[in-house]
Image (cartoon, rainbow, N blue to C red; front, side):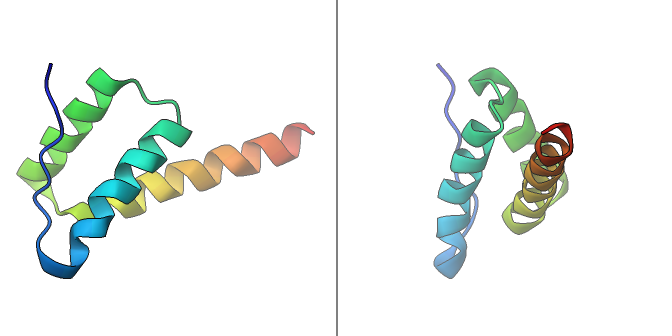
Length: 68
């Protein structure tokens, strides 16, 4: 089974844990989490991926509020 390898350093190490929590809140399957993580490692940094995932979570939350 593949796992996510943190590439953050120093004070940014908490970002990896935040990302895992956000992935789970968005119900992103583990295999897709790995793909996203590997894409991030090749193209951007941890904080940028966290911002993208936070944006997705905010959109999901707004959609739920509109439906209710």
